[in-house]
Amino acid sequence: MNKFQKATSLIDEHYKNNIAINLSPSYGYRSRCEFGYKNNFYTMYSPSGEIVYLETFAVARPSIQALMPNLLNQINKSNVLKTKLFQINFRSNRKNRVLVSLVYHKLLDDEIKGLADKIANILNISINLRSKNNLYSTHSDLLEDNIEHLETILYQTDQSFYQPNHFHMPEMVAKAMSFIKDPKDLLELYCGSGTFSLPMRKLFNKIFATESNRQSIRCLKKSINEQNIKNIFHARLSAEEVSELFDGRIFTRMKGINISDFNFSHVLVDPPRAGLDENVIKLINKFENIIYVSCNYETYSRDIKNLSSYKIKNIEFFDQFPNTKHLEIVSLLSKK
Image (cartoon, rainbow, N blue to C red):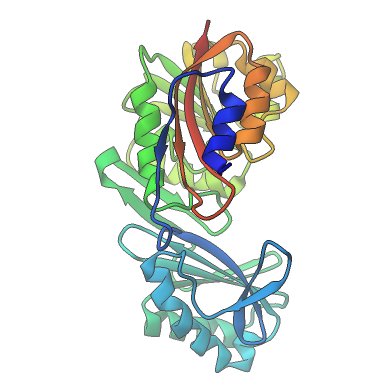
């Protein structure tokens, strides 16, 4: 039984229709990659836990694939760059610009900063040098991504969440938007840098977007300001804190935002693989419509059992992680 069959079997009691499967290319799809560094190679771990040494990575976007051996050569020529380097991260956008982060267990001095500037110019990339409480960027630590057909500009850093599949990310957003009927206002939990909330500003009167990660909120705020968006309001709150907010707790981080000013017709949740906790389930049960985006069909199945007053109206699978056991679910649940 493949992963799509397993997911369907878990959801079958809640949804009887056929579920569309959106496939992805098996290679060249990842616009976000993280590697270790050891013995002059990039490193990853196999499913069995064995270390794998790499010079390039076929799953990555072509812009990252082409860069990897050239960057590795530059790093390996310099003892300053090699010493106490333990992680190398890549991010790529739709214009094939690449942001590289070199993460160290040492202080960042002028010599290593000068070398980063030199390599960034040679390879035509942006480089972040990062160590504990220390960041140096050759250009900007932000990477812009323009999703033109969704009329959206997104930003990311190497410490903010960003959907990794170059092909599926805009498709998942467009699919979620197609599910929405009679929109008023939207509450979004786990909003990240605004992957869903920014395009959805065209559908909803107002959006209240919440996220606990500081870097993601920073990226969202930049998108809102640069695009002069007036109907998205945001606060750095975890999903659990949003539950407490609706129960009456006061947060200074709300900065004048009043929940009573919204008329929510939908809530959107895109949780980590652990799914939704008990308090979040209790909160979203108050809404007429739930847009549930999940990267774990097992916790999704568990959660919809705890949302028994809802029915799945629309659902599709996205093979966001080809050749793995993981898939992405985009769905709409409405009160029965």
